[in-house]
Figure 1 (cartoon, rainbow, N blue to C red):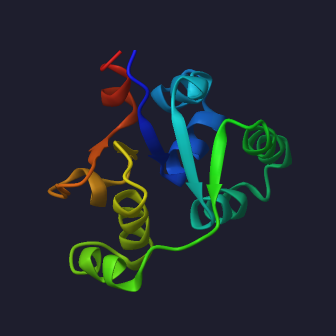
Figure 2: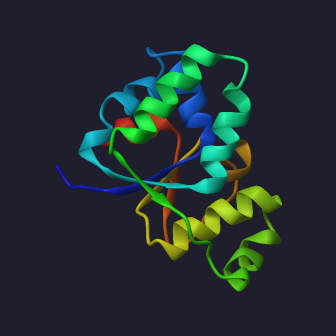
Length: 135
């Protein structure tokens, strides 16, 4: 199996941790098969969304500290973020800029802004279910 470099949008973590039987949950079960890059913005989004669900937040933090991820501290160049700002909201443009800057193969997301009409040249965008079909 080819080893892909992935960025998972925060919604993949949220869906996957809350519903282990979902495609996102199945993807979280096989993270060791891939190189997973996680930016600080995605970490913070997930933590914020899970702050009232301590059990699930703890499961997320365990996942983060398990060594399956490479956490990215630096940010992409502002010009790269601006490149995506015309077609995406600010946070989404930042995630897209990370994907290009880090030369990922896939951005995995359930976000309609990424899935409808957004066709970057430098990486592919797939829903978890569609990505899993590749295997």
